[in-house]
Image (cartoon, rainbow, N blue to C red; front, top):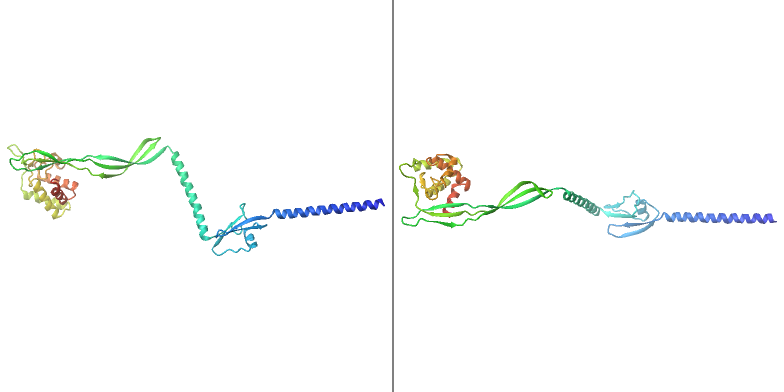
Length: 319
């Protein structure tokens, strides 16, 4: 009797043990199933969001599970074949939004490159700078003879005060440890032109005379014929030559021996001082060709043409 009773208790204990094991196994399965579930946020192109609970990890499966269909102009991030990332967010964007996002990322990368470049430049021992400096342009003093009548006073007076000009010069300067090591001129421009100082000399014009004086010979027609040929060679017009005739008629009457003892001006073109003409020949005191060649060179360099020189002379009284 005791034996049957013991057997019955043993069977009951086994049944209870098996039941407990089954319950534990079922609970573990449910727990494992629950533990595989993920909350995923689906963000649409209109900025609305949908949170879903899913056991799936593939993007296409999650969308299909929630009956979400992509339109033709929509893209999904991550891609349909990818698994959801740790952020557990699926973005659905149209093509325009995707392009803007890519452009923003590229802009961020470019900014990062610029910042990096600045840091390198700041840490360098050699620095280049653009430096703009101003320099003075000294004015010139010009003496202009004015003929006076017999008996009038022969004095000199300043009719125009001289003023210095200003020019700006741009340099590229290299510094090493704050010390200049190299300077290169880039450009130069005149900011303010100088104004010549003009002195009016009131004196009778005289010519080089006397038994011992060496004088140029020739005729006025000969001088002008030579000057006209030179004007043509320089590309000047007949009108330019006519202006030259008027100009030198006023200055010297086309007299190669005309000399101003006060200012030192000499010759057909009234070079002041006369020694300026030596650049075109040592015989400038006696050779009209040397005088004319220098005079035309002076006009071309300062005014461009005899016409402009004559206009200036009419306006200012000198050229």
